[in-house]
Amino acid sequence: MYVELRSPNIHEPENIAAYNNTILNYRDTDFFLWAGGTEIMSRADFYPAVRGNMEIISLDKIEELHHFLRNDRYAEFGAMVSINEIAQAGKLVLPRILLDTINSTACRTVRERITIGGSLCTQRFKTSLASTLMILDAAVELRYMKKRMHSKWFQLSRIYDKNGALSIPEGALLSKVRIAIQQYDYQFFRTMGSPVRDPENALSMALVARFEQNSVSYARIIFTLPSRGFCYNRDLDNMITSLHLPVSISRYGQVEDFVLDFIKDNFKDIPHLQESRIRGAFHDMIKDMNEKVLSYTGAIERQQQDR
Image 1 (spheres, rainbow, N blue to C red):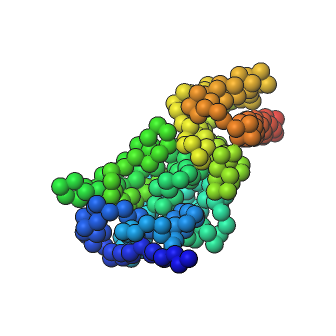
Image 2 (cartoon, helix red, strand yellow):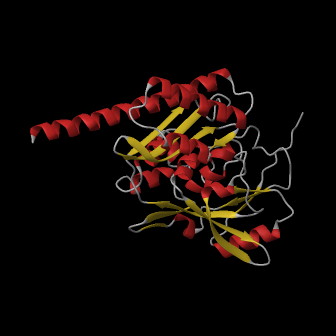
């Protein structure tokens, strides 16, 4: 039996004004924004299209979205800059945890196609890149139409709802990402499982902290459950900030239980494998933090003895 092949209509605006006209002309039609294409092309049965009257707007020819700017305070990337380009351009100035997150994402060939804007706006699963940028206080520029085109900067965490779903105006375009250039005394990133092949069991955890002698003076921690969303809250940050280093076994057990109970309260029915990975990632982080502090303390004591 012959099955009709349906292919979507492709639009290629060359600037923001042309993009605005396109979305106005097709406001009553389903349309998809095509950045690097990695998320769309991984969908089952996306092409041939199972429905007609579908539009794809390619962003590749909008030159403004490919721009990169850096000064002493921040780096600013257009939404069409690939994450591999970000890693190359910012390897000497951007926080190491961001570079670790990028390098853990797929292989280099795929990273050359994944755009920073597309990775933040994926609908089917949450990315560890988005969560790492959240704890780094990244901001994004959104352009959206009311009576006229508006342009406004938001903290990255504000474009997601409490369940981690993307929450931006219909037809909005994430056009830029701004990342502060700053370093931390401690940065930790760990990912387990595949968010694409097995999102139900995959996990990532990211943490940045500053130390004051043998205590944590500042911390931000976030867990990403790809099929569910982000788990980030000031209560978790405060729990880590209250730690004195090195963390004792009894104190570690209390903190681990608090973190796990908090995640379970936010996401019901966590699979056993995912729960084990949460425990494993958190254990690795505390162990690594203890080792760093003990190594630093030992070096200070040796310097004092040498004097």
